[in-house]
Image (cartoon, rainbow, N blue to C red; front, side, top):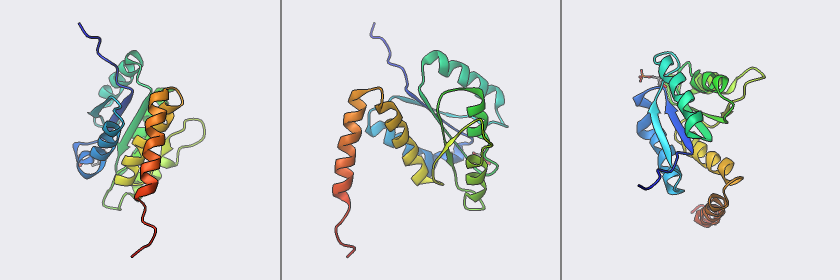
Length: 163
Ligand code: RP5
């Protein structure tokens, strides 16, 4: 039987409402690089047991980077980072306050437990995937090549003139 390859990235989000328009773009970007990842709805306050189980399993499954997205009082990335030594990237999602509350909750970690926080919403979701790719590229040459190639193509897509 063919050995199943492990997911390198775990993508978790506080609610189903974080997926459409936001975290789906994180997953799409990881797919673009052929990075195997798992996606789950896990909330630090609504499903704390699920979070503990996910992190226990993540270590066993040898997940290497965790992306945690949440909105409003967004403590998911911080709590996740407190329970693992894996790098945790935080994506603040949109809210009634346009995601500013989510951003501050995610980014303002007191010293000792870091969360690598990205921008609010779709840009942060895409960049969280790209940063995960970059972290993985230090270890996997094949991923590094894909990232270099992506950057070359990306640069070419930027128009020389604004009109
Ligand atoms: C957070 O609360 C989630 O990450 C989401 O962004 C926000 C609102 O969740 P729902 O009420 O839409 O499920 O836990």
